Image 1 (spheres, rainbow, N blue to C red):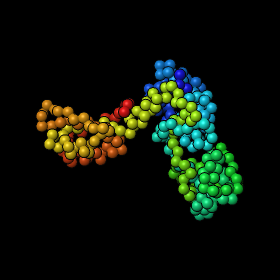
Image 2: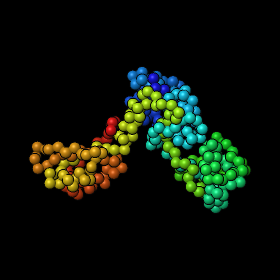
Image 3: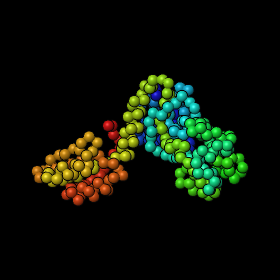
Image 4: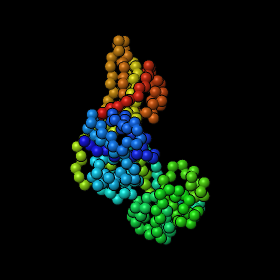
Length: 282
């Protein structure tokens, strides 16, 4: 069986479980289950702390796992990113007292508080910046400056509201843009079954990103219409009972749905229908 590590809690857990469920895998009903075999799909799930998953994958204890790109890089394990999963996106940045710093080079000689010391140290080392020290904290990093533990913090930033409330502001270039990723061991061949898991997860990602669009259009306008909806390879064009019209089906990016419908209507298409995609293989 392919051994898959899944986050057991935190912001990564629920989206990861939902993606695996959409991909056709069995998922636990009781949050206390730590191991869940899925013999129908020849896999076995292990529910672990998100921060530990890359370590287990790198050690070969499990074959693959879902974790954050930031957690994987900070683990210093032999795990590598196999597939980005498109959820839990975040930006990792430096922040300090408002108006105090505006460039990463100014971090030199400062104390930095962070939950990701390895990631921060590597980022600064690549730029030749030597801090006074890196203080590891597991939470409430934004309070470190006010409490005198550090001069600068490095943390995940979403809206920046929490930082502003603490009198802080971000500065310099982002340290990392992170998201949930599927990781595997970097120094061995791909484990058996990983290709199937990869295709299934890619199918979920595509189904979330695209919709099916069907419409009728006069034959004389087919070329104009399909230029608006080229699909992935090419749209399907079928004859209707009324030989002067054709039916067209194509995949369209979900976030462009209404704009495309407006454009098709202006061209002369009618009976424009949009259908969600539950699963696919490309």
